Length: 385
Ligand code: NZQ
Ligand code: ZN
Image 1 (cartoon, helix red, strand yellow):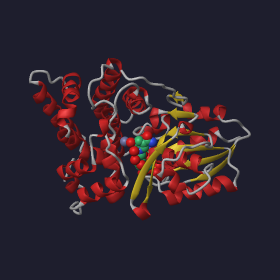
Image 2 (cartoon, rainbow, N blue to C red; image 1 turned 180 degrees about the vertical axis):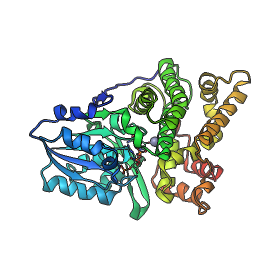
Image 3 (cartoon, rainbow, N blue to C red; image 1 turned 120 degrees about the vertical axis):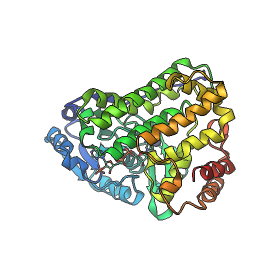
Image 4 (cartoon, rainbow, N blue to C red; image 1 turned 135 degrees about the horizontal axis):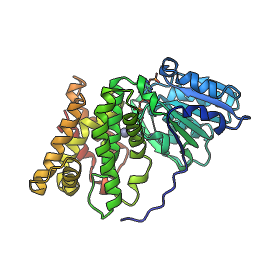
C-alpha cells in the first residue's frame, strides 16, 4: 500500500425527511444563495421542503444551472454573490449544480481570470462556504472537493479541485430519487460504477481492504440498480444506491492505491464535442481502454471477474477478457449504448481531435503510470467508434 493522508471534512446527513435539518445547520444570520438547475426541484417538492426549512433565513435564489454547468451562467452567479454580499451557497441538485456551486465558491474569492483559474488548475487560497441537498445520486460531488465546468463557446470541459472545496455538509434523502427519469438513474449507476473502476482497475498493490471496498460498491450497484429502476418507491434499494454513489467518489477507496482516470479524461472530451451525457461517454470509452491496456490491467481485470462476476474457471487472460464482455453486457442491459457512432453520425476525426487536444495541453500521459499517451488516446477513441 502507498503512503497516504486522508481527510474528508464533509458532514453527511442521510435519510428520509432530513432536508428539514437545513434549519439547524446554517447560522440564522447567514445570507444564503440557493442555486438549482432547470426546475425539477419545483415539480418534485424538494424546493418547497428547502424553502420551508429556511423560512427564517435570508435566501436569494438562482436557478438555471444547466447539465454540464456552463461557465457563462456560473459567472452571473459570481456577480450575484458580490452584489448581494452572500455568506454561503446552498446547491440543491445533481452533480452539475453542485459542481457549478464549487466553481462559484472558488471564483468569488479568486483574483484574476476565472477561466484561467480552471485551465491552470490554480491553487485556491480561499472559498465561500457551501453545502448541498443532493437530488441525483451519481457523481459523488456531494462529498468530494472536485468539480467539472464546461464552456460551450470553446467546446471545452475542464476539471479542478481544492481541499477548500469540500461541502460543509450534504443532505442525502433517498426519497428524492422518486422523480428521477430512467435516463438519469441509469447515468448515475454507470457513473458511480466507473468512479470505482477508475480507482480499482489498475494493478495489484496489496491494498486488500481498498480492493474489497471497491468490489462491494460494484456488487451493490449491480444488485440494487435493477430494483431502483423497477420501483422508485423501494426505499431500501434507493438508500443503497444513493450511498454507493457517494462512497464511490468520496476519496476513501483511492487511498494508498494507484488510480486511473483516463476514461474520464477521454469521456469529458466526448461531452465537450458532442454533448453526450457524462456517464454514457464512460460506457463508450471504458471497455476499449481496458482492451487497449490489457497487459497492464489484466491482473485486476481477472480479480474483478472472479470477485464481482464470479467468473473463475478460465485462465487469468480468459477471465480478464470475460470481465470486459460482462461490463459491456451490463451497460447494454441498462439500455446504454457503447459505441460513439450510436450517439452521433459525426464521429469521424474525433480520435485525431482528442489526440491533438491532449498534445496541446502538454499532458505527459494520463492513467496510472501515465500509460495513455495522446497517441494511445487516439487509438482508444478509434476503437470506440
Ligand atoms: O436541472 P434539473 O431541472 O434539476 O434536472 C436535472 C438534469 O436535467 C435532472 N434531475 C436532477 N435531480 C432530479 C432530476 N430530475 C428529476 N428528479 C430529480 N430528483 O437530471 C438532469 C441531470 O443532472 P446533472 O446534475 O447534470 O447530472 P449528474 O449528477 O450526473 O451530474 C453530471 C455532471 O457532473 C460532472 C459531470 O462531468 C457532469 O458535468 N461530474 C462531477 C464529478 C465530481 N464533481 O466529482 C465527477 C463526475 O465524474 C462527473 O465528471
Ligand atoms: Zn464521472
